[in-house]
Length: 218
Image (cartoon, rainbow, N blue to C red; front, side, top):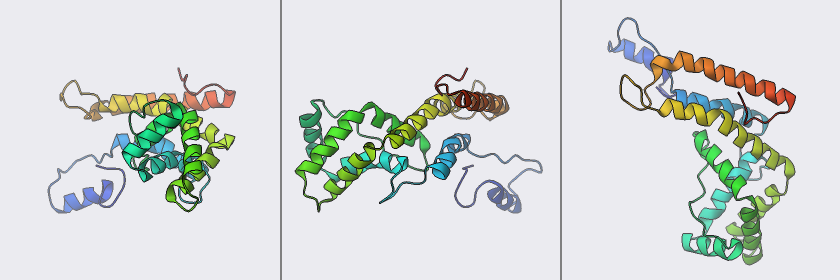
């Protein structure tokens, strides 16, 4: 069962019970992949805030490159990118879907890896597009956000947490179960995995208190 939306978890279980399609004893389980993502989603939203127009936070910073890339035609975008950076554009910037924080992490990492490129491209769009165009407005917003050091620090934090905690546990949850021979069905081992997740979070918290890197948790 999913972790959010209507008709899920206990509510769905009760409805199924009324229909007589459950056994007398049954378990209600949520999507662990979704739950793992929320260990980053909930704190980031609470501390940094959601993205959106006129917002000046890391979530809006992550969204801006995707918005800018999709305002222009793909061929025009690739040509502009190459003329400014001297590099081929390559893979498209991931869409940072707020309900799927795996993609938020991927987008964050992509932005950090191409930080100077995005800065140069946004400045070029500002200079080449009139101020009343959507491209100029988005590029101006991106360039402005990229010049706030605290937002880049927040981005580094999100990337580090993504690599240190979400990636390894996501990969384990998606692997094939030895008995069922099916990918993603690892519920029989979830209690042991929960213990490992809890240990990792405890180690992360301790290292943060000492000012150590999040990328070293063991």
